[in-house]
Amino acid sequence: MNIIDGGITAAQGYMAAATAAGIKYQGRTDMALVYSDTPCDAAGVYTTNLVKAAPVLWDKEITDSGNKVSAVVVNSGIANACTGKEGLMICEATGNAVAECLGEGYTAKNVLVGSTGVIGMQINTDKIVAGTKELMAKKAYGIEAGTEAAKAIMTTDTHKKEIACQIEIGGKTVTLGAMCKGSGMIHPNMCTMLGYVATDINISKVLLQKALSEVVVDTFNMITVDGDTSTNDTLLLLANGKAGNKRILSENEDYQTFKQALYEICEYLAKQMAGDGEGATHLFECKVDNAKTKEDARILARSVVGSNLSKAAIYGKDANFGRFLCAMGYSGAQFDQNDVQLYFESKSGRMLVFDMGEPVAFDEAKAVEIMSEEAVTIYINMNEGSETATAWGCDLTYDYVKINADYRS
Image (cartoon, rainbow, N blue to C red; front, side):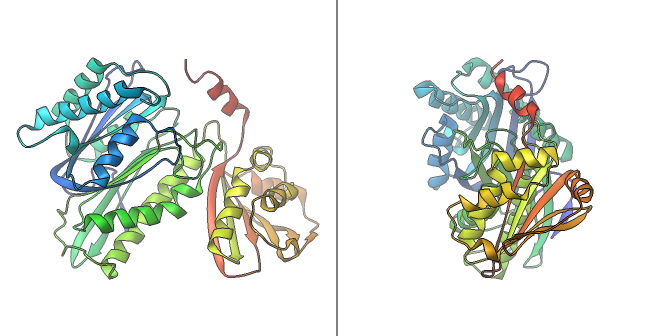
């Protein structure tokens, strides 16, 4: 897999645009479009929250059907969640605006939508329709258009999140481009995010969905910022087939190559979101090795990065290993503490602090140095099996409270 410049427009046939529609924000772009000049198969994974935003309900109906998709329209500022029938009418109006621009043969059901921002506010229909039509008029190929789209979907994010890569399948170059947003209300179970991946691979819709559903388990579902699973979580995968590879119809070597590339893309974006958690100063990673089962490894890793006390220790550069062991102990996974080895790790080095049930004397100054890096890892060797999992989060800072105390205003 080769990482290349670009994002959501990297693959053949994809265009993008951004515009300032004034949905909530002023003085910045707040709507984005992803458009394929060839209709796409689409796959989606969505929030597990029982309170689902209107765009989630709209998109799930489309990705569950056999409908081809030509466009995705996303707004930031207002989440269109807890908005009743009017919320779904907004989705339909957005789809109809795209269909009108495309002409005969297109309907609202060929359009996916996304929203992020404040829950419980209604979106102005005239603004969203006007913004959608402006996006369709401005859509363009190229890196710059994709980057502007990635910026437009941000809320409390501090930077855009995008990536692109290429692989070879059947002698053809296949490209994947992606963008996402996410900073707060992030927790496993499809985490809190909007994520979009666009590829030119030729693959069946069934396998497209299978790859996405399996990849999300060890990428986006392994991040947490604050323990809140949102109403709007959406990850969409579009495939327009323009790479010209022989259509993938089985879980063969070509499928595995594509799935691995999709995994790498999703892992990168997941880590970008975790490290950009609201108020964060550190990316906080926990890697669990040699657990009895894969699920145990996942549970343990997520429990450690999800603990407020663990997150506070990372912020304070406090080598209080007991907090991480405590989070393991209440996780629900079964293990013997006398088998556990726990290390602090970063680019400044690795330090063993707990060894087979016993604390290890360590240099506090060195521990602070290790924990002062931008990315800090808690490495845990369970010594009870062969399974591994990694989870990502961030530290808990004063700024997290400040950001969320006045988010609505």
